[in-house]
Image (cartoon, rainbow, N blue to C red; front, side):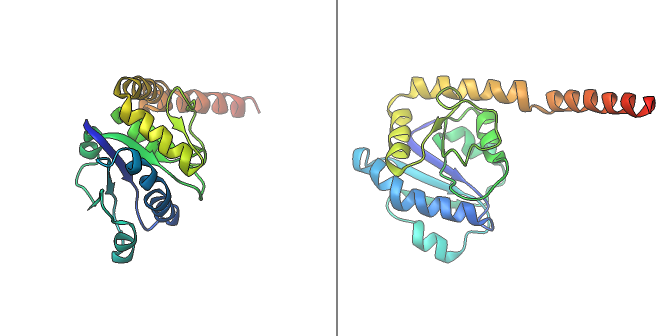
Length: 183
């Protein structure tokens, strides 16, 4: 993984991704770069408007736009950031990051709906200072970042892998059929 590199992924037709990126580049990244000026943020995602790029691109920020295979950036960068502060639903991008073995820093809302344990599977941070500190901790301690990422990958393999989910669904369907046949 590239040292001192951060990754943000999101489709920019989804308002929470726009707000999260603006929050990160405006309030968090300057705190990180004050301590590690070499730190960079790469932004991957479709449908970014020219205005969004103009408003968020500054020194240390690179927009890649849509990529042919998300696994490539997920395997290259040191820390995945999910600074989401609005919206609802499961952030599939976190499960992708967990599966790819990239350590994650996320807001509470960003990790909502995922059975991950803060401090074990990812670092949770809900203020700009906490978020910057969590990113810096992982950038400065790659061995800790690797342990966190390994725990998150194991979580995906044991809880969210299609074979696990399919098996659980099969059991639920069988139970429902059995219940209906008794009626």
